[in-house]
Image 1 (cartoon, rainbow, N blue to C red):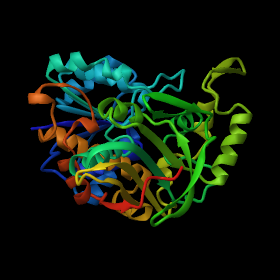
Image 2 (image 1 turned 30 degrees about the vertical axis):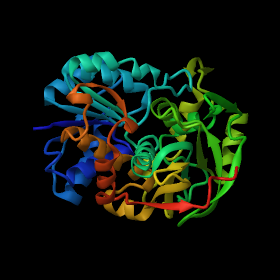
Image 3 (image 1 turned 180 degrees about the horizontal axis):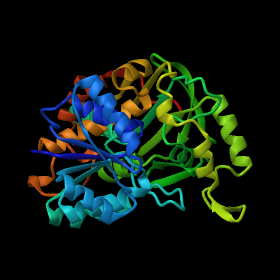
Image 4 (image 1 turned 90 degrees about the vertical axis):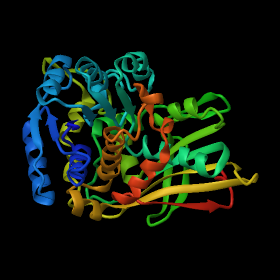
Length: 406
């Protein structure tokens, strides 16, 4: 019998355990752990009220390998779903290796002292996981995650070759706050303020942060301004689908968000290096995170929809050039009604549950059942796509007249 340990009691962790509890045949034994156990207890209470299922809770500091490994052993976890901070990916992977547990996360590792989003730290674990007969599945959120599965599904069923890929992430929700982020403020702001990079003709093209923008009309949301950014699935997709000549990632932001962020940058509040304040070191961005609204508190007031998908252009299986747009629309209020969380958490937490289900049931594993470290696009997309439709993230695909004209 599988025993799943979920680490992280934010909005994504909350959605994931709610959805796991709704599928007791796949997840009969669930433990939710965090540095602050009271947050786990509150989520467990919500899970019990909404589903009638009791989940266990625990306290753990995932910065420490030994403490994490001790918890894994104490509950006999077969699978660890890491929904904590990306800084903790490597310590949790080490704990899994030392205890014989499979591993899943939604975001790649990054060091605390540098906003560097790369997979090489985790890919370096390939031989150790393979030799241990354990599977590590990286990036089982929406982007990264579902967008990679979307891409491989299009390749499997519609394209002989994909030439260009654009990933479009639109959050059309309004939470009523002057300035707030819809997921961890520290991680969000580190991403947004990083140098933009996209892949083109075998190399990286860099542009200043938030310097390239375009308008796009998103179904169910309307026309929004989206900005070219770097996102980690570009690295894994260009590695595992090297035929793609250009991969870009776009995310929408409102004018108020950009204005606030610009001011915060100008006054140094987005810095990730420590400064001395009253004789002690503080990191400005971590202080800013402490005074901003907690993302998990935004669900009750957020209205509107998200629209996230991919636009692929290439040679179709009919021998003709074509462009297909595959996307999901998620409603903030519907997500909150089901799990008590807004759609940004929902669109990450549901894929985390589905990725875990793929592993727990043995639907996804390494070649010939061997272990190793894998990205989403290395797996068969069909069973994952089927579960998206059944568990709250239905998708649709349509043909466009041609690729984006920018």
